[in-house]
Length: 461
Image 1 (cartoon, rainbow, N blue to C red):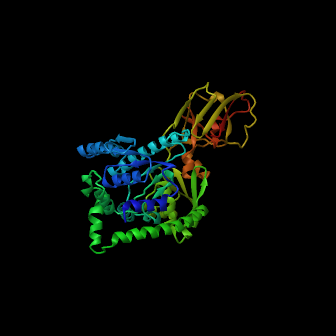
Image 2 (tube, helix red, strand yellow):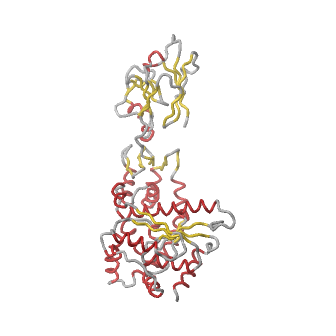
Image 3 (cartoon, rainbow, N blue to C red):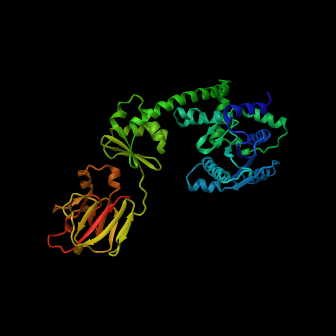
């Protein structure tokens, strides 16, 4: 059966809602046989499109050759080309070259799509993009899917990682119309239609993970299981059905276990310990916050760990806090010290706004309100310093004549690790006058014969 006919049938199966009249495509074209065949098939089907080509400058003259080849394609389409310093980006962000290329590629593709979407949104009747949906199209095929599933399996993944590359990703407006076709079919089509394309010699190098699976692992497995590729493709179809059922169940379960509180997520330790699918639940929670499959066992160990124990991902932490696991962002070291002059009346900071007023008749000297306090202005020396609490800090809590370390004070209040880290203190001449939102220092309290009062009110963010 002719590949163009199969392509049309596959499009009708997966992408029937889009046709040449209601969408405009951005084709990711490397110049290799996969993307060249994809471009030919899409043009033959009557779609209007632009071409986007990335030059990662990793293969010297070959990279320049590929760019010039794509620019020479004879389609009546706009061609976007962009050079990237992929090696520098990978080193700066501590990524493998392949991962860096993927991030750079998709970020750029997304910017093109978003620009065209904005044009389409403002287009008038008669203009090319009027009422057109903009979609990104890549040339991933069935062989890519086989390799991806195997890589996911060996790297460590859940069921979702075994369903392979999806034909459509709504959040990225991305479609992959060649997933139903094998590489050999694409090569045969290129030969039959005399389509020129460029060869990437790095595909023969096993230094890249995907190439190792393609050139070494799969061929060796085929010597024992000749039908392994077909079997994996069938497994992918089954896994997609299983994943749908699984996702519905796990979503309902997580709603019962994970509770969002402000900027944190709280999980009851007891419920996790009683679950008979503990590892699966932990993985489904952890992956949403950037934790790897290898960290699942460490997270489970937190259930019996000491209070305050934690494990980190690049941006988040899971902390054991008594009967709970708390997921919270890593605190950034920014704006941790602010100077306040005598004439300042209002200061904005990370946890809210601090308002200063010199008054004659306070009404809340003995109030239990910890958000509005009164201090003796005669004892205050400027400039005041507003900063995050730190290890070793101490003060004299109101009503006490002995000093107390903040760590002990926080313990008495039964604060969690994240709550402790969010505490600010107001300091005068290297002495803490107020643990903000908690308690003032006894040395700075107002006296019965005070004639004026420094009132400080903590307003919410």
